Image 1: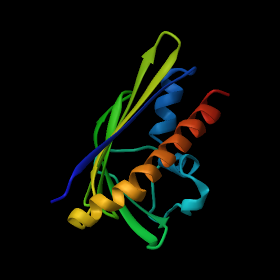
Image 2: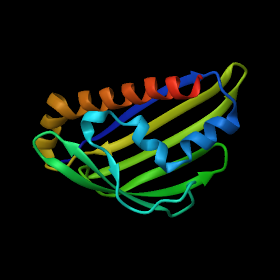
Image 3: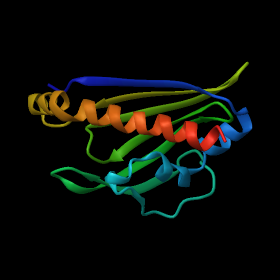
Length: 153
C-alpha cells in the first residue's frame, strides 16, 4: 500500500505580480531555490520561460542513493497565476506540484501544494516518517527563505 502525502507552503512577498510570475516561470531559477547540499543541476536544454508540455531533466543528490535523475513535465499553465510540474522519472512513485501566485494588497501570495507518494509500500511509509517528510519540509523552508531574499530586494 502506498500512502499519499501532502505538503503546503504559503508566503506573502512584497513584490508585484509581474516580477513574481517572471521569477517562478523561469526554469533556471529552480537552482537558486534548492539547497546546495542537493547538488541540483539541470541537464536538459531549457527555454527562458515555461511552456505547456515542457520537459525538464535534472539531477539531484539524495543521501544513500546518490545522484538521481528527475524528469518533470510542466502542465496546466495559467498565465500570471499557476502551473503544475509532474514527475515522470524520479525518486517518487507520484509527484504533483502545484505553484500559484496571486496579487494581494501588500504584495504577492506564493502558494505551493505538493501531492506525493513514495515507492516501496510500507517501507516507503517508514522512510517518510524517519526521513522524507522532514527533508521535504527542510527543502521547502529553504525555498521559502530564498524566495524572500531574492524577491524582496
